[in-house]
Image 1 (cartoon, one colour):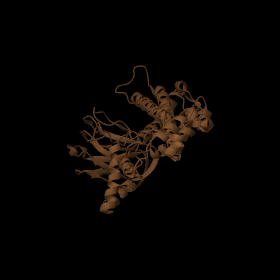
Image 2 (cartoon, one colour):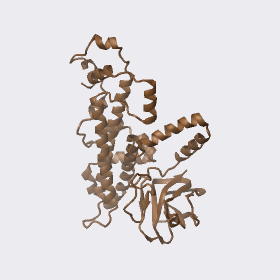
Image 3 (cartoon, rainbow, N blue to C red):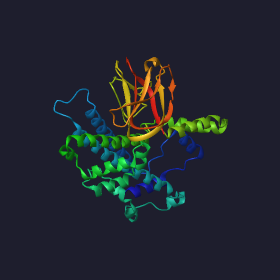
Image 4 (cartoon, rainbow, N blue to C red):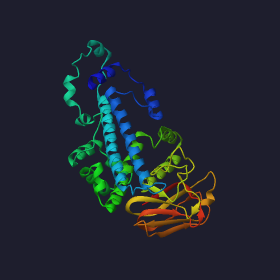
Length: 388
């Protein structure tokens, strides 16, 4: 039993020194697993996350094909794939949450002394008394999770996964999450094919916002989106601030607080044409493309537009230009906003070479933010932020 295995390992583990724990904290070393059951939960969470990312990627490719499908629009298929992505993401979060709970419970147990460890060895029935204390969410984490059959089952899975903080981090509103949750709770994968065409398009967009928000949140949680070296750098930077003064620390804190108001963070984006190199939406940073997060083909009036997920109010935009070469390609650059994706209003324009462009303006409302070159050319940028 898991509790019995945890008990044996806890008695066998030596105490870790203060220096070793400090090095582990700075370097991001993971503590030893408390038992085989915890390891299984962690592995399962990563596998479910992989399935969620694949389903979301397939759905995105269905909605953004290089050429139209010969057998008709794939909107119903995209709905089903985003539906599956959401379910896998919830199972992944539930597994990670239970893994964290088990680790916290293990760390809270008092460590036995050497005398206590030698006094008695647990027999086969040692863990029987604790079996009833196993968290109910752990019982729900079977090796082969299924799609919730109704709203009640989805509510139980949602409660175990607790996705709301991650969705909020990805700028998914509570209303968007609740609407999609209701849709997933009452529909099966195949039910989307019976919807009218307009409803298929509408739900594909709504499901995409939540699915990509969950995938983005999972990548942050697992360290896939923010690599371990970033956490190490931040910790070492904190030590440098404490030793060398508050000047650098004040600047870093100010930048961090400003980034919290970036409502484009984690939001999906589309471009007018695709170059082989670049990140995949919604990421604006990836190892595969360090010098820009998107790159269009040469065309007339290339553009990138960011879907904020709903009409939002903002008053500034921050654009970082490509710096290793070709920064002149991004001029002139027009900033536009739209509430319906059809009618666009120009709110700023940059005609001079720039490294970082940070226009501020009277607050405007819109769902889509677009950057466009009003001529034939190529567009590529390092990052785009939209601020309240």
